[in-house]
Image (cartoon, rainbow, N blue to C red; front, side, top):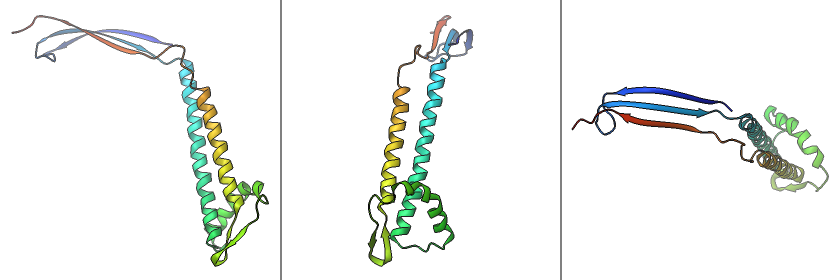
Length: 155
């Protein structure tokens, strides 16, 4: 922890009350200790996990929508989504049978199961990170400014 003390003499023409004078100003700043810095980095990792979760859930929603709508798998974008999400959905294939829906679409429960599993896993991971970093820091951060007025009052 770093403590800096600075003593400054500030001369102002008029203070807040409209009184000319001089002020002594003491500024004390305490820098964060290594625990606070580490906590910030670990929480940033938790935020990135949430970003990755949002991306994964979004592409899985696209996959689900394309299969329900019976999208053309020869389309470049549809093929890209199927390629990217194939590995995400494969572990959950065969748990529940696919069902046909009106218009030639397919409801693939493996995609829904994958979405729920990834959501729960990410939330548990982020909750664990937040729990590990929620302890109070050994020394609080503090910034204090003290002003004292010196001078004469003008009536």
